[in-house]
Amino acid sequence: MSQDLACHIAGRRRELAPSLEQRNPADLDEVVARLPDAGEDLAAEAAAAAAGALGPLTAGVEARADALDRIGDALLEQRSALADLIARETGKTVGDAEGEVVRAGRLFRFFGGEALRIVGERFASTRPGVTVEVSYDPVGVIGAITPWNFPVAIPAWKIAPALAYGNAVVWKPSEHASATASALMEIIASAGLPEGAVNMLLGARNAGEALVADPAIDAISFTGSETTGRSVIGAATRRGARVQAEMGGVNGLIVLADADLDAAADGAINGAFFAAGQRCTATSRIIVERAAATALTQRIESRMAALRIGDPRRRETQIGPLVSPRQKAAVAAATAAMRAEGRKALDGRRGEGAPACFVNPLLFTDMDPGDLVMREEIFGPVAGLMVVDSYEEALEALNAVRFGLCGGLYTTSLARAEHFKRHARVGIAMVNLPTAGVDYHAPFGGLKASSFGAREQGRAAREFYTVTRTAYQAAPR
Image (cartoon, rainbow, N blue to C red; front, side, top):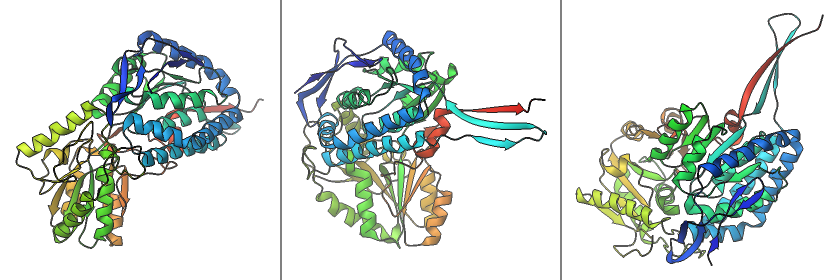
């Protein structure tokens, strides 16, 4: 059943005529939600409401902590219903979706604790009778722009720390995940926060651009594509706003000849194809040492043939559809370009047609570093496999792309593992693990074109969501 969605400003729903719709990507005949396309005026109103909430927010740290705990508890209690909604709206499998909701709940509870651990510092001055104190204070109003691929977890790791450190939020979720966003907003609105502490703008590009341009927004936290991210960084920094941006990656997974090849094949399948490849930490490039190439490829091919692709609301499904027809068309164009260049691929469904927004998992073999799938983010269940002659050549290939979010290594060599952690030019290094899958209390972010600004998640979030103040005081004479 379809629902009409509303923006949320100053603690109240703001009804606007719907002009956009989101369809179930597994069944394009089903309209999941209709939503408005907010613009400049509503963005300004939301920013003003958020600014008005700053005083009440900073008045009581325990109240913020309790509210964050209540949001976390509600997410955990409602995990099944939210997971089903995520599956309908975005195509994520219900098992993955439920795991995401649990992660989001724990994120809110983690930052509920962090709100009570905001500490300053005190230094001895070089001058007698003078003290030096350092405090970490709220930035002000945070604009959060979030994508559809993690429609609860990514908003959680932006909104929760923003509130924990005393900021107010104007949130613009993806138009492809607005029903899920509205469900999360209802939970946040009932948590006992001051009116205007969190405001939600629904819409597409216009809403995001209005949020970034609004002078009352002190900082922007963005997760999305590299192209949009660069635009956000430029617009925000030109007016002096603080900005952080996470913009994806073309993540490499190295498999050495001494590795446990069954574990490596499982890790490659997980990283490349689960979540239909729609994770910024997904494995795009498998870089395998020549002595293990045939055995690894055979293992991956057999696992691809056994993948369960279908209705994301069924528990047994491993891979659901892409989020939209537009995303399917983009992936199809990329794979067609590869095939036009004569590149061969292993097909996870052996050539069967893929209805609605489903895409067959593909592994292109015998790749060169310059091939499209080895240098650009496809954001679908598509990966390339490249054969190298040594660990050194593999590491050079892994580091050669302009992105640097995540990289992985499968090996039984402790020396190679330690070398990899120091020399892989990525923000997140995985050893004997899939590239996708991170903990909610640890810093998240990449290097090079993958990320801009401070890290997200964990205690590292303090750097973005607070301003550092230093105060000197002399004893009165």
